[in-house]
Amino acid sequence: MGAEGEWRKISALIGALVVLQVQAFPTPADDNADGGELREDIPEINRGLTHLFEGDIAGDPSRNAILDESRRWKFPIPYILTDSLDLNAKGVILQAFEEYRLRSCVDFKPYDGEKSYISFTKLSGCWSYVGDDKTGQNVSIGARCDTKAIVEHELLHALGFYHEQSRSDRDDYVKIWWDQIEEGKEHNFNKYEDDFITDLNTPYDYESIMHYRPLSFNKNESVPTITTTIPYFNDVIGQRLDFSSVDVTRLNRMYDCANTHTLLDQCSFELINICGMIQNEEDDTDWVQTVSSADVTDHTLTGRCRDSGYFMSLDTRSGAEGTSGILESRILYPIREQQCLHFFYKMTGTAGDKLVTWVRTDDGTGTVRSVRKIDTITGDGDESWKIASVTLRVREKFRYLFQGIRGSNSSSGSILIDDITLTETICPNAVWQIQNFTGVLATTPVGSALRSRCFHSLEGYSFGISVYPNGREAAYDDYVGVALHLCSGENDAVLEWPVKNRQVTMVTVDQEPDVRHRMSSTRSFTTDDSLQWQRPTPASGATWDKSCLCYRSNDYGWSTFISQRHLQRRSFLKNNDLIITADFNDLTNLIKSEVPVKPTHV
Image (cartoon, rainbow, N blue to C red; front, side, top):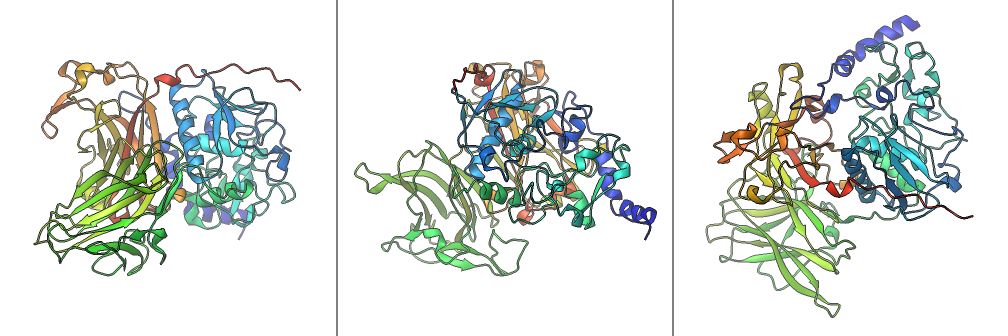
C-alpha cells in the first residue's frame, strides 16, 4: 500500500476521533467554568513558546533522571506556591500532591531554605525541567494549565520522565505523520534510544498521562500528527484523567517505593486470607467469604467476569432479632489525624437490617480495645450495591469493625460488603450515586437535569449537584454536563456572602477496586464575588425548588464534563451506576502562600 493509500486508511479509522477533537469547546461564560473534556491540552496552550522541546520541557534536553540517579529527588520535595499562581491552580497543585502520596512514596513539604526545591509559578504555558537540578527550579502552571492532570504530568517531568511516544520502540505502536506537523515543531516528536531513557521494563502505554494526543502540533486542525497502530487506541492516547497503572508502576520502580503515604488498607476479599480480617468467636453468627453467583454478584468483578469474585456476607435469615456478627480489620497505624473509609455494601431481603461501623483504639496501655461507634446504615429494601464514605478521626493504632445486625424476626436476606478502601484523606463533602444511568441516558431530554439532595461543606454551606445526562445544550448532546448550585439553608445567616475563594472539585468516579489504579475524571473551579455566589435568595436570582424546599442558585460547572463514550470505558458505570463526588473547600489561606527564597551557602 502506498503512502497515500495508507493515509486514507488511517484517516477513515480515526474519523470519529477527529470530529470529537476539533469540536469547538464551550468557552467560559455565565454558567461554564471551562471547556471540560474539550478544554485545550498542553501543546495548544504552549503554542508559540519557542524555548521548550517536546512541547513542555525546559532546560537541557540531555538531562535525564531516569538513568542519571544524581538527578533524582530526595523526598519530601520542598515546594513554593508563588503568588503569581491563580488560586484555583494552587488548589489543584495540592490535589496532585495527594495523588502522588496515595499511589507512591513521592512526598512534598513547604520550602524551608533547602537547596533543591520546586517553585510553582504562573509563567507562559505549562512546562517543567526534567529531574532535580540541585539549585531550585520552576514548574510553570500558567493560564489554562490549572487541572490536576496537567500538574501531575508536569511533575512527572520534574521527577525525571519524558513523554511516552519518545520511547525507542514507539514506532511499533504509533505512527508519526511528519508531513502534518507544524513547521519547526518536528523536534517534539524525537525518539530516544534506550541508552538515554529506559522504559523500566514496562510495556508501551497508550493510557499514559505522558502521551501526546493525536492532534498535537498539527498544522491542519482536523488532521492528526500521531495515530496508533491499533485503531481503538486513537481515542485513548493523550488522556487527561489521571495516572495510568503503568505510570504508577514506573514511578514506584524508579524511586524504589515499597509503600505509599496515605493508603492504610484496602480489600476486595479476593484472597483466602480476607486481608487479615478477624472474627470474634463469641459472635452470634459469622461473616462468610462468598463467591459471586448468578443470584448475587460481587462488586469487584461486576461486568468483567461471570460467576467470579468474592465478597463478605452475613446471613440474617435466622436467629433472634439483634443477632449480630463482627468483622474486624487488622491493626492499623495512622500518621494523620483523619481518615476516610469507603466501602460498597448491599442488603438483601426485607428492610430493617443494620450495618454498623466502629473503631477499636488503643486504651492507653498499648492494647487495642476501646470501642467507639462511627456510623449506622439501615437497610431500606433496595437490594443494589451502594457506596458508603465514613469519616474516622483516629490518632493512635486502631482497627475498624463492621457489625451486621438482624433487624427483626422477619429478616429474610443477607448483608454484603466489598471493595473496602481506607485512606488518610478527608472524605468528600458529597457522594451521589445515580442508579441505572444508561436508562437515564435513554430517557432524559437534552438540557434536562437530575438534581441531588443538598449536601453541606465543612463550613456549613449547602449545595447540590446537577447532572445533565445528554448535555446542557444541543451542541454537546454526546457529553454529560455536571454543575454545582447553592441551596439556601439554616446556616446562611451566619455564613460569609458572597462565598468566594472556595474551590469546587467534582469527580466522576472510576470504580476500579484498587484505588491506586483509578482514573477518575476530576475538574475544579474557584468561586468569586459575582452574583452567582451570593446567598441564594430571589434577590440573587435563585429559584424555589420544591424537591429540597429551598432556594436554589443557577447551575455553574461544565457542559462537557465527560463524553458519553468515555463513560463506557474503565469502570465509570459499574453495575450501571454513576458515582459523583463533590467538595467545596475554602482556599482563602492560599491567597498569600509565597515565601522568600533563602540564600544558600556552599
